[in-house]
Image 1 (cartoon, rainbow, N blue to C red):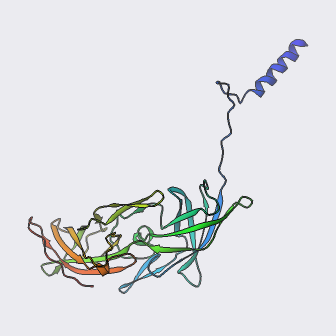
Image 2 (image 1 turned 30 degrees about the vertical axis):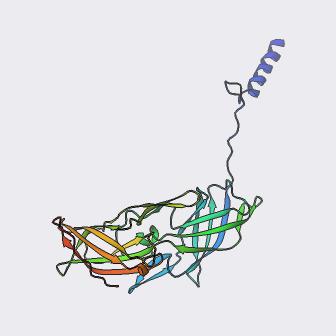
Image 3 (image 1 turned 30 degrees about the horizontal axis):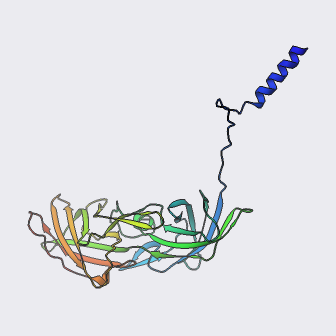
Length: 295
């Protein structure tokens, strides 16, 4: 009988110690951060949001299902989805569950980025703006900041002090080219600036930092129609012109060069700039041709 009781005591001791690791420390349970819902109203002027082309102007509006990334400092917290206002498509309701709420408290300032998490202008295909196309869904960047009013630990919600008003962060350019007076069919277009302030990528760490370089547009197939480019040029001095240089691979794989002076009052964000029939020359390592300005 004594041996049986001793055996039971041993089993009980083993059960009590089964969560003790080999080094003698007790395994701590993993902490799972609770999910919080963030909801707010959003508005934007007519210079951005989902883009579509109407004649020579851009129409801008919210589209249900569009996404907005949320940052606190340099930390990505998650994304919100838009529900467009049924009577005024320049307004929407943004709502979503954040992946992280670490550091979020009353008076925290949240940074919002439309339309995606990564601010990247590379990889454009030159297609005309439409609400489902890449210009609208990937390259039509706008930002807003909101201040946290309260964090409700009971119903797991975050409230903000006011709605988010988004500000456009680039302009949309369209280019077409000619050589010897005839339209040029473009297979690939690379654009550079004399001031080297064309943004290729932006990163966030308490503030946005830009990386500069050339931008290459590769249409799905060679075309002599307009090529559209979402372009952030941080040379924004209204009294100083900028010169864009173009390196073009034609449909026949020949190389063409050209340039165009952009007046200072055409620079800045939130614009639609149309530059057509830019004259270029076939490259023979000579100086490129001049540009014909059509606005």
